[in-house]
Length: 265
Image (cartoon, rainbow, N blue to C red):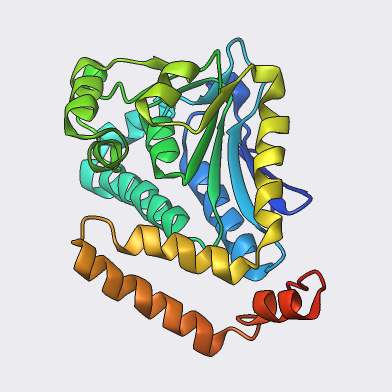
């Protein structure tokens, strides 16, 4: 379901959602968050989808993934902290949790500047493919605010304590290659090659059944911060559930034994 603020499209096995506010730097509003939730709904309904890709639209004076909250909406937030501001930031937090628990990999295709809420989206993604020319950073502190939707703990998980603190305390930014070197992105390519790079990555997921992807992603998500022993308890539980409840659990084994390609539903 596309709106004026977001455009949802299908490209082979990937569902793409584009934040479509180029004249406003693809800034976040309640409508954008609603669009992200709508994309998650579509992924939940369509078992043929293997990835959700989030990107920003082109066409403004600068190239932006998302610069965070819309400046006009921010005025309304400051006018009503508990009635507007906190509920909105909470809605951002909830949709990021939803992205993290989605059954398919979530890819941030970072085409340009990503800061504040835009940065919080990309650190919640499973994988980041970034343009060489992009610049990313939290930048809340430089605006006189702390982050509120997960930049602290998610950047720590991706970067480690020291690098995360240095980046957020200084409101620093990273280019695409720097983000790869720091561990925030998988790969960096020239902006014109970004879509092809994402499509190539998504194509590697098509070799596997969706539920195997889902259980593997859940293993990463549900074991965050646990000891190895506790993590194994989670993983073996996911493994057993898959074997007992997924009708395709033995398809890989059976296809190999029968000398044919697997038929993933």
